[in-house]
Length: 246
Ligand SMILES: Nc1ncnc2c1ncn2[C@@H]1O[C@H](COP(=O)(O)OP(=O)(O)O)[C@@H](O)[C@H]1O
Ligand SMILES: [Mg+2]
Image 1 (cartoon, protein in one colour):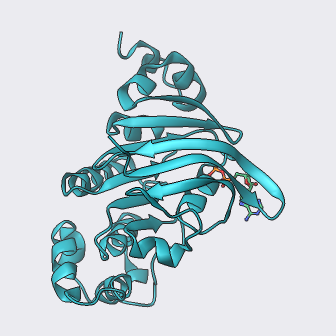
Image 2 (cartoon, rainbow, N blue to C red; image 1 turned 60 degrees about the vertical axis):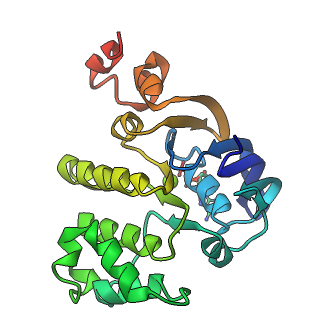
Image 3 (cartoon, rainbow, N blue to C red; image 1 turned 90 degrees about the horizontal axis):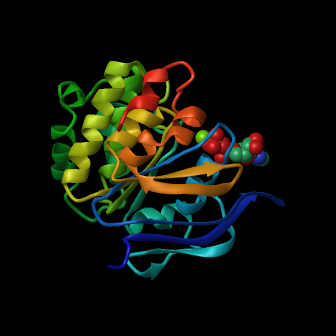
């Protein structure tokens, strides 16, 4: 089977500085794939390059077998790949509904129908569409950012740390919504620091260290992997993680 998203030996970085080196990853249709790794490993840099925010120094990216290597971020959304950056992902001065309208501005039709569909997955937003986004809680803002990214019916949703700075309960809520979105046929590629929670809900995961891919396994395999536990899952603080999967 050909992957929905295929990243082939991509290197990227900032100006002359190469941060990630010859990375190859795949995401199949309807999969949840998570990239974990220490701070500064280049996870956000890689995601930004795939999303067309950063240019690739070398390598290729295909989506549905179409070469999208050189597409800009605004053109990536038109071919079905939406990206939610970690910060500045909503317009705080606009209402929930206006944010969604902005997200759907490239649609030729059906904006209000799509707003209704998207909001049906996020009841806490649906209840008050005219609320200013700047008044929302952290979890609700993240829900709105994800909703906005869904407005153009993406086949691939890329999320940079969707649960950063959220409480455990709110993290669970966001992960539950990500599951619901996947069930609608959308593939998810996310970067997460809350690695264990994310990996337990992921089909597969990749470990990125200092700009290099060091491991690819299923989500549960990575959680059970003692090396990963020690390095990234807070095993020192939570020794029971070592015993999981035994
Ligand atoms: N805008 C930028 N300009 C130059 N270097 C950057 C920029 N953003 C990030 N970096 C550097 O790239 C490296 C990887 O950063 P990042 O991709 O944000 O890591 P991660 O998301 O894995 O924590 C870090 O060394 C960081 O300092
Ligand atoms: Mg990051």
